[in-house]
Image (spheres, rainbow, N blue to C red):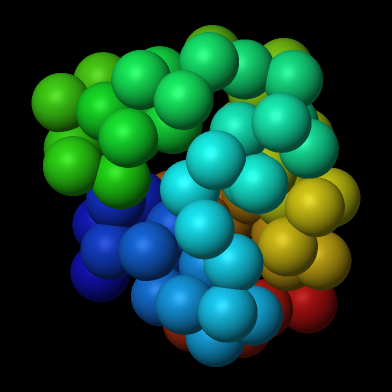
Length: 69
């Protein structure tokens, strides 16, 4: 599974809107949408914030592991 798919899956599991996640991560709505659509890749700082926000590992987000923790 790719980063974009994982982000969308995690957001939907929590019944969140893209705007809410973007605000929580302190990034623009368009940036977050691009991450979910696979058009852009987040830098290390944003990737770490995403992992913290969704309470998963960066390896899980990147599809390197199927274990969330």
